Length: 377
Ligand SMILES: C[S@@+](CC[C@H](N)C(=O)[O-])C[C@H]1O[C@@H](n2cnc3c(N)ncnc32)[C@H](O)[C@@H]1O
Image (cartoon, rainbow, N blue to C red):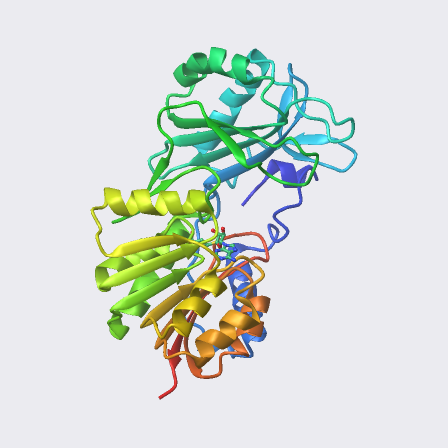
């Protein structure tokens, strides 16, 4: 992939960009195999991504001025770089970001300065669906610009008709966070339909979604293929987010329970299940380890458990709980092979049956890995 920002030394996020894509995949396979103490030939065929235009979410820091806003990254000295034509995004995202810069000028949204702690607009978060519909979120220091945003919203909607959801998120504190707790909807529509092949996930703000939609589809499909031979009557999808695994496993199971810490993500999952007419799913706001501890403590179990934790992994408590449980199959989807390897050392009552790299984050050293663990007989 050719990138003008990288060539001009304005952005170094894609650290592997100079390595041809086939070489990146080989390197990733070797890293995953080494982390798990396996031979590279023990891994399944890797799932490749398209090399550009695959990223569905732009998390842009606002900088510059009202007249000439920049959407991209900011260094510690407060110097901003516009990355709105980043080739990781599809063309429709580039067009949307361009329109949004015009809106920032029109609505006089003063970019927040991390050095002076002045200004209002901290971030612009844009998500694009497979149908090229868009959710836009303005992360503000306060609600001071809200009236102007509302006033000029109709002009933004005319210029960007694909924008079906728009919100203001309020982040008053000066801290390294992407978003705050308070979300104010500007549109009647409150969720963005992410239409995968046979499941539509209704994404509300403040909910995690896999950043590469094509690879997310592959991940959920492959999880279903690995689940099917186990004929699982009961499934727990721990760290379920907006329910991607749960909703793909619902057709091959009698009952699926999703557990997730974010209430917004659970609201998304419930909406998606209801819209799909599913009556065998249940979603619970809570901590994954606490849920498993309580259920297993009461003698309740599952035939199959999916875990898809943040980078820190599932940790020793949940790994030990699963290891001592009668859960027959565990599908562990990890974005960090190091914590995956650490957790697996505590799960020796399982056989590592399948290990697969999914290149969710091309041009970086980050990888998604899906493993299937079956209980030793
Ligand atoms: C890598 S994302 C996976 C989301 C989902 N499985 C998917 O495919 O989109 C990890 C999720 O874990 C959630 N999470 C973080 N800590 C948690 C906890 N202690 N218990 C339950 N969920 C948690 C996050 O909010 C996030 O949605």
